[in-house]
Image 1 (spheres, one colour):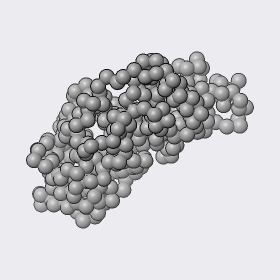
Image 2 (tube, rainbow, N blue to C red):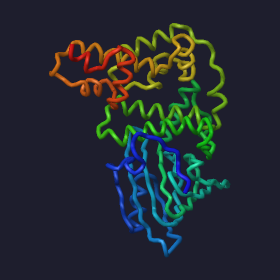
Image 3 (cartoon, one colour):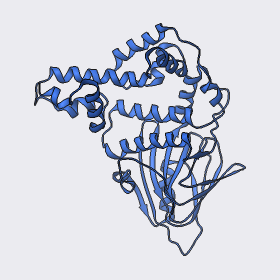
Amino acid sequence: MEQLSFRPVTAPEAVLARYEICRTRDIEEARQCGEKIFCENHLCNLDAKTSLDASIFYRRAGGIGIGRMSYGGALTIKPGVLDTFALIQMPIRGEEQIQLGDQKVVCNPSMGTVINAHTKSLINHRPNTEKLIIRIERSLIEQHCQQLLGRTLAKNIEFESAIPIASESGARWLRMVSWVYDCLSLDDELSPLMSAQLESGLVHMLLTNQPHNYSAEILADAPSLAPSFVKRVERYIEDHAHEPITIIDMAEHAGVSSRSLFAGFRRYRDTSPMLYLKEIRLRRVNEELLRLSSGNETVTAVAFRWGFNHLGHFTTDYKRRFGESPSATLAR
């Protein structure tokens, strides 16, 4: 059976394993559990010979929610109109056939799907299908899109429904999704800084990677930025690095669109705003470790306070930046 080339550090069967919210053979219980995550829906078992064996794992972080779910047997899912959120589905194995308005889409390990807010859908779930789901608040997507454009939206955002996993854009999306699933599978406690970074990174990737009716405008060449805007954001980052600031916060402070902000940093600093923020936070960790006496506080506690949830990734970045491990700095 074809399987999704999903490559998180976490083994597929362990993805969100500590966040099971439903395991049942009762179709009504499965329906009620699904409604807690999504919206009103109706489940219809299509194969009397195959019993329902539903399992749902789910966790939220700010305006995003991720999950892993399976129903075991064949059934039809009739959701209400999503309205307040968009839903991305990526089968790990198996297949779903989805009716999106007048369009029919096959969703399998080679092809993910986006179900837009406001879109009426009908999902035919095949036996032994297991899928990853990503729920993103519509208001969050619109807020980020408006920042990228530098203006308000005249109409709803409509994403193309298909996500070809084998394409270059599909590979980029899969890397981002793998990172998000790792963070939310491995870390029981997320700092506000990490939660904001996950939210901002995922929505930005969706808007710049998955085609939609505003893509051409977002991806058009941005006009040159005066260095004063870049310097203003640099000062803002220096002053607020301890807070869960996002691209939206930076752009609002600069008085420019997110698109222009990225272009300005790329042109004048050869980096991105979020990478600049990461470098500042690494520097602050270094300064704090140098001030501490060994034994007073752990490297993990300091790293977590500055938004670094993955100690392994943090240690690699720290050593690249300062030429030694954080524990070596603390031991001085």
